[in-house]
Image 1 (cartoon, rainbow, N blue to C red):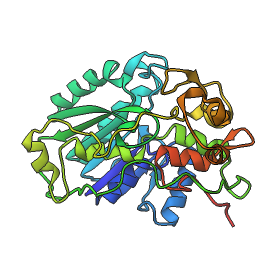
Image 2 (spheres, rainbow, N blue to C red):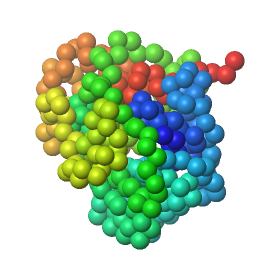
Image 3 (cartoon, rainbow, N blue to C red):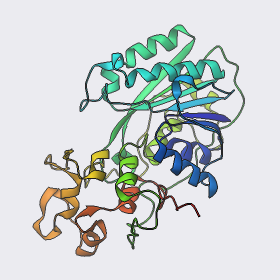
Length: 330
């Protein structure tokens, strides 16, 4: 199954799709730092190497079976401008729909913040239905797939009824939920990386998805190992994205882009206390603040000189260790 990754970011969606058996044939990402990360993941084989285009407005789509993308959320987010799809940034979703049409894809996957449901989803759904698509959506929290923070996201999946089935299987792998293993034992410095600590955290804060939550793309259809999407979709099952393990109460806030630069971005903790993530990692566990209980060793790993670690942020977001790391050119 060939896929096109639009608004690619650091490739979180493609990371999951390729584990399910898809092959990314094109990326589109305007951020130079994110493109560096993609190039590094091409080099180490984590992602399938393919052309990376810079401007979605001029992107000429190749043929593909599925188009995926998390368009900019600034105009539909509750924390943003709230002008909906009339805003300059979130209006780029129409180019995502254009690419889906021009590529002749059978499937379209869109990810965004929950505010999209109130500020644009109806318009997008009406447009897709008029062009012959059927649409389903669901809201999934990162905590539902085992991550220690909330991060609710809206996942939209559409099938083009005018396109014939490809017959390809997208196999849902059997993977453990939650972050990748234990918290990092060692916090590497930024001196030997081409991207600074702040740049890496910014990319993770703006990430299109957390990989584990992206598995909702397949579970939305009720798909299981060995079944095709077509069969699952036709069965008409209700969306079921609940984890097979007990859903833990979120222990910490969700990282956002401003955490990488020491910004004043605020979060809601498990106890409803508003705070910045950088304040959370600086908080000594003995004080029992923010509703978290961590050992002194865990605290030391999370905080280095009062700043967020890029490695810890990768872990809490569910990315493989070192995913945003870019070695200097030699």
